[in-house]
Image 1 (cartoon, helix red, strand yellow):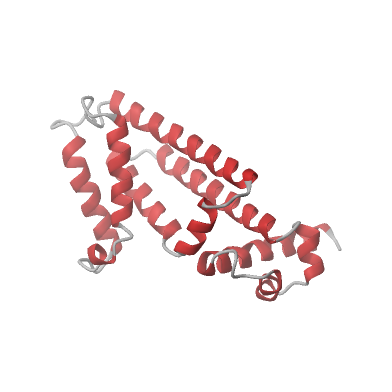
Image 2 (cartoon, helix red, strand yellow):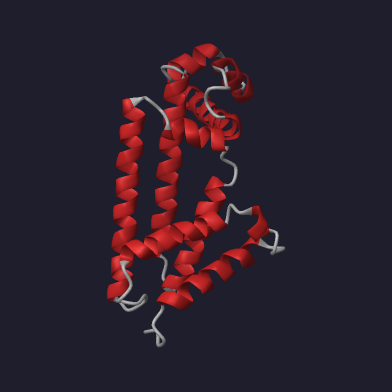
Length: 197
């Protein structure tokens, strides 16, 4: 098998694994089902991954990397901090909308020490970056200096939870409007009355 075919088979398996795991969780999906969905043989699967758990780990790793890259890209944009937060909320919603509760529970209840360690390490890295960005926003006067950063982070997570609340979303025809309302509501409480340019 050539290098490009091997890479293509691996990518097809990662895509199929992500789709199936997101919808049904890992336990309910077999290697055969992943191979069938990807249109590749079991031989190709085992050339690319040790087992189904290895595929799940690689899918999760790709998802977390993609999420952090998207977050960093938003934070680098030359736009007001309020708009950055709106984009981050939209990103987080977009990333989590198709993930089943079953998959999330399986990942967080995993007894696999490598997976658990990776999730914890990624969580700490993500938290550290977000806290740094909030700190810099506070130093620049984009958010109030008398507001505790941990509180801001807690409230941002609450806003993300609202984006998964069907009752809340049913108030809007467009999810973008829901995100903007949440963001504006959030920032009325932390923005200074006069914002620096």
